[in-house]
Amino acid sequence: MITTVKLLGSTILERIGNTPLVRLDGLITHLGESAAGIQILGKAEWTNPGGSVKDRAASAIVADALKRGLLGNGKGLLDATSGNTGIAYAMLGAALQFPVTLCMPSNVSPERKKYLAAYGANIVWTSPADGSDGAIRKARELAASEPDLYYYADQYSNDENWRAHYRTTANEIWQQTEGQVTHFIAGLGTSGTFMGTSRRLKELNPEVRCISMQPDSAFNGLEGLKHMATAIVPRIYDPGLADANIDMDTEVAYRFARTLGRQHGLLVGISAAAAVASAVQVAKQEANAGREAVIVTILPDSAEKYMSDRFWQEQD
Image (cartoon, rainbow, N blue to C red; front, side, top):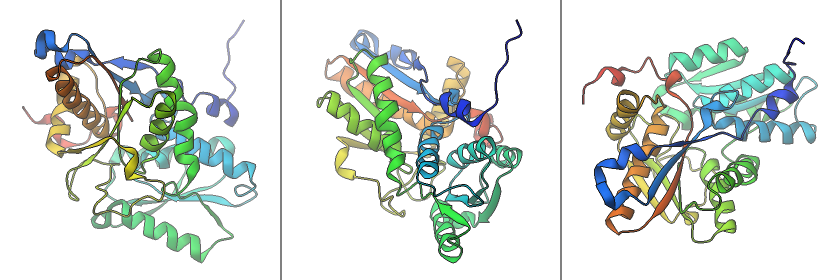
């Protein structure tokens, strides 16, 4: 019998989630016996069909809009994005046959631009100097000027963003670690991944420490992440949910990306490398305190959308 795959939008939706955990304990072997009871696990979100964690939020937002009749019948989806959510929207738009218009800073990686062109999305480029906030302002402008043309998904304010992770990501982590997770770490962009996953994990076990991570300054190279003190703060973000926050240096994230590739054979994106660096920092703290820990972090995507970046050629 010939095995076939039916390319329907519903099939795409069914393939989102249930991503594996990758063991990263090799990054703390230098700590010796003090780290014997510590595990670092990364959730490999690049195995989603659109290649990133943003498939989860985008699919939830789209499914909700379709259910409520806000999308389709000629009305297209509009949103601001720095890349991965836009790619997820574009994939879903192609599969479910609705138009997608995205507002994006024009300095996103060439790889992202190629993905979006391949899916047929319409892109409105904004100034690189304005970052993701400039894209948000442009999307708001378009939504206000042509409300009959667009469903403005507004991932930064849409509760379906964090609910996607509350319903899926957190429960997967709980099941995959058999309830042994002690720490959860995620970067802050829209904040949906951190908000939804943390809320659910704390319901399952209030003792789980949930730690957010963000760039250490407004001027950074951590694409997709927000420096909350200087950015347009997402409506769905609740700073009181985090037990702690880690401010991440761009060069540290770049170094971890190179280390993971050159010494562990794992090529991940910049925000994923920043998440791993944060997990190692927490692991060292727990090892120094003589505590055991199961630390889970989110690896939002692989390195394939960042290979044109020059930092890969640098020597440590």
